[in-house]
Image (cartoon, rainbow, N blue to C red; front, top):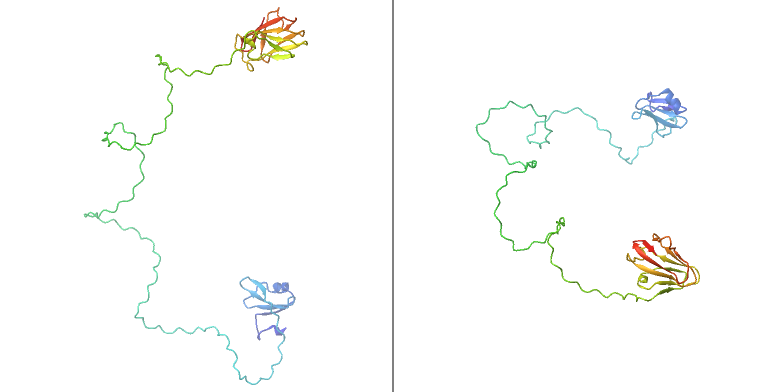
Length: 299
């Protein structure tokens, strides 16, 4: 495996290894410039100091060097100039003479730490100039209200421009009832004439089997139920028909059918024990009188 060396006695050439594992087992830690051929990849691996690991260069290993051929004739064409090599470091020359031209001033360095305060000098006997007034401090808390009224300032001239009217204040509490009658107000206009009351002597004749009293029945000479079959007359609640208290309605059974007086929802009908809600004979009558909001007396 002598073909692995790049030069005679190259100590960086570690030789041939069939696998990367074999290389890492033999040289777990390499040195800068060390390299080896790994047979499984057929490439050259080098030691990378930055990652401390073996790195595949991807370059195939060179073959065995053949014998040197005869030297050919010198070329008459100049080849391209090769890259410039690294600059060599020569010995430092002697220091030149001092420049007579001042160079630009460099940037000011950071301020150093403040030194300790020196001792206080004697008090000055000359007053220094007054410094500028500082900004006003925040307003202090409001003091307690004064108990002494200050003098009233002079009255300003009367304004010639009327200001806007302010909003109406809330209504004050109602005052006590006056003990002195106020003046009589003017007489109001006369209202419209009401409808004429039913004419006395008329009879409300009902031919059906049911009837409920209505306003106006109290002005008639009676409600006459004339059906030949049993029939019912109902006294309605005050919420439905508001008869005045004291109203009287005359009820007559005018036909062969028995007439029964019934109480509407919430209505109470009071009657003596000798008077029944059912009228038993044709041409027999009852009188109903309203004695309360929903209370009637049957006689």
